[in-house]
Length: 117
Image 1 (tube, rainbow, N blue to C red):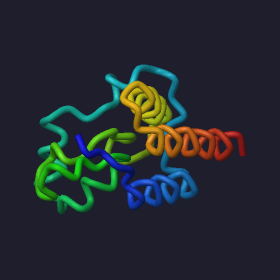
Image 2: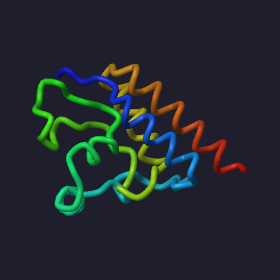
Image 3: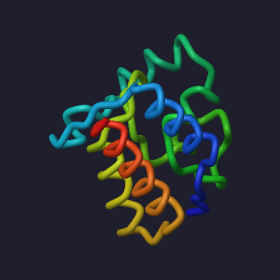
Image 4: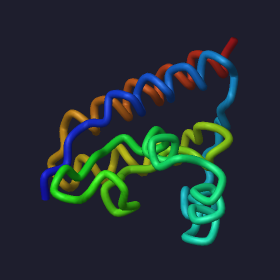
């Protein structure tokens, strides 16, 4: 798999965190991670580029217009979720995507700093 960091998603997550659009949750990401139906509803109203901004990874072996291209989601299409960043960081580490792991860790730290204000 040719997965690389999605810099647009990192910038978008940083902006959302600065704007206070985050959840400092410590639950389980599976409780907040949008399911297929939620993804499809989002895509019915938004362009694939907007969908892509919610994913830290890009699988460049897949077409830009496919949902499968976008990996490591971190939010629910409304806010960044701390548990989403933790899940992305853990999965990226397990799969050897160190740039995605590092980006998720830095975003988590930014979220925690913003939450402490």
